[in-house]
Length: 291
Image (cartoon, rainbow, N blue to C red; front, top):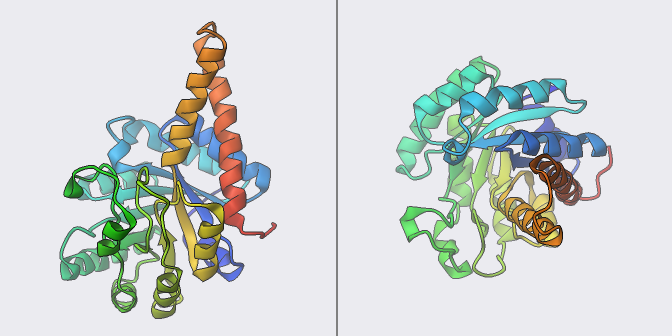
């Protein structure tokens, strides 16, 4: 069942769990994530990142995502991750995405706020939910710091101000806000340290209509993720370490069989690995909640 983020995130926050938002840059990724959600009977968000478009164009993967969401036995939101190019965002809307992250976090605060205010009005008229970002979410591949993994001390410079988050959410009307409190995209240089008190302060400062989002959950210990959920995060983005683990699994499989395996058999094996991996992630994010 295709849905947007509004109701599923409200239910998640009320019941102290989080909805997983997992990148699906292939048909097997889509099937694995939705299959895992169906087995656990939990809602899920499947995600296409703008940076993945050179790998698989939205015109190709987008319709597959929407079709699979509509056919799913559980609520599935089809979300655009870190959309920065407005024309690209319009492509996602045209394809049928039910939720959009319009990321203007690299712009000055007032311009970020203005753009999200205007876009949110447009999206809400179409029944589409909107996510924004406040406090720049650092990334291993981000040219702004040389493409290197940051230390915990370096990540602090990107932290989101709680009062500014509250003002931004009220002014723009966005449905979800990605904030920085110790996580980053990509592979970590050291075990991340999360500022859970900051999450609590952000949640307290924001209106009830806007949900707190954790990006960069890959590589964060399960107990730390769950502390973030209990503090107010109801949507959590996850992918980098799943992609890395799948690559390592495929390499091991090829080594074990000496390369004596057909490609379709290898893809099927990788699919089952991804589904089981996704199930483990979803179980952590459910934070003890049972449907």
